[in-house]
Image (cartoon, rainbow, N blue to C red; front, side):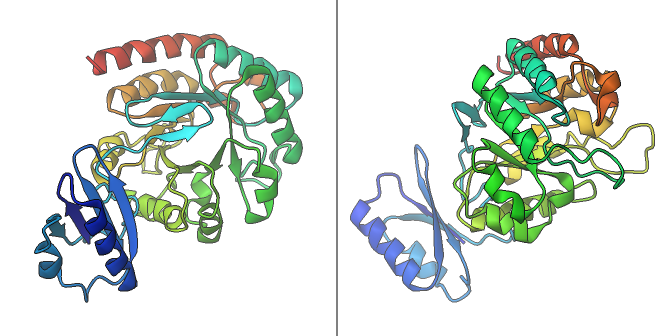
Length: 334
């Protein structure tokens, strides 16, 4: 249920209403916009008399929310959420460019890529320290060493770092990571999501390769219900019957999610296509359809990459793409 208060509602009466609702055993999500304040009621609202609340002088309207996701529902929070990652703002008209290698391989590699993507305008550095691989024999990442190398790259370039967590047990290693990524395979690792909900740290939540938008939002709900509202969603392609690309990039998800939720949504064209030459056109399409950012794999020597070299751009290719993305954004914002 949502309760929309009238503009300029008396603060004392507003507090009295909130205290009374909490006394009914409800959680209250308060969203204060420029022109109205919205109270999102979370819990068993079936015994709440809607007509009684609607009759209060400070109340503009009362509506029931039928969707199972509450905290991340735009009805609860009409204005776009802006998530701060260090000094970088994501959402609310702020476009972020995240770039870096699929996996951190060594100091020389991550520093070279970090310098290159920053020079091209990227404002966050991605790099896998823990790598979920289909085969147990493939490179699994440098783990704790990889995170230390990312921190070294951050110290040199100033770029906030983004890396994927695989297990609750690894949380202590991520205390100094700026943006924790939950990969597609862990989108419904609910125990992990619950623990991330206890953190005061932004989370990048990737859509599972066979999951619906509702399931993605319900996973975000797990994090937000725990108290952490700093969630960024990521569309990274879903598995379909097509076999020419690694996945099918569902760009319709971007405007659809914009209707359903206030959370920022970024796009990963690298994992969606699996083919480097397809990354630029899909990245431009994502920028045009309203995405709040891009996360793109860049490697200084893709032919020798230990992971996903086929979908990685060279630094000079990324530089050219970044310029085109900025031009698309200029046109979209006219």
